[in-house]
Amino acid sequence: MTDKTNPFEAMIQQAQEMAKAMNPALESFTPKGFENLWPTMPKDMMEMFFGNTLNKDGLDAKTRLLLTLAAMTVLGAQADAQIRMTVRHLIEAGATKQEIVETIGQMSMFAGIPAMTRALELAQDVLADQEESDT
View 1: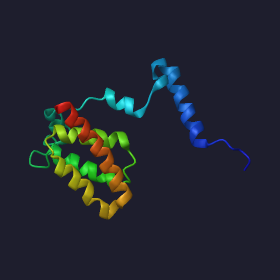
View 2: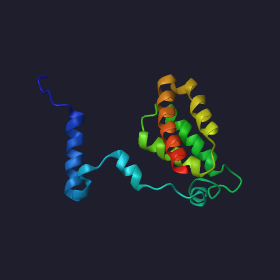
View 3: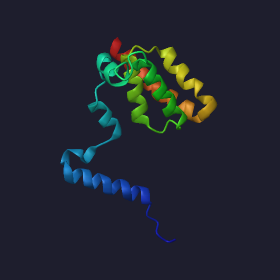
């Protein structure tokens, strides 16, 4: 093969051009910027969507979100925006820093140390931001 074009870069470039064509404001789109547009849901809304609405006697939103965080860690902690958003929602749902860290740490046996480390770094960023905003 003599084509030196990176197919992934070409695909990303095409997607960016398509997004700009639909909305010129998306020219400087970044996943991190998208996160800033998505506010953390209030706890009542999370309970409605993720918690006891599905099953009155079932898992609450915090437990479901901890399971979601565990699953994303096991998948290799590749979804940065989704992990950060889940950690923000967990804080809103009443999860403690210890519960978040233990959930990620428990997954090291299944996902491996690199995935656990990456998920912890992402969670730590969110927790640090939260501590800054609380002061």
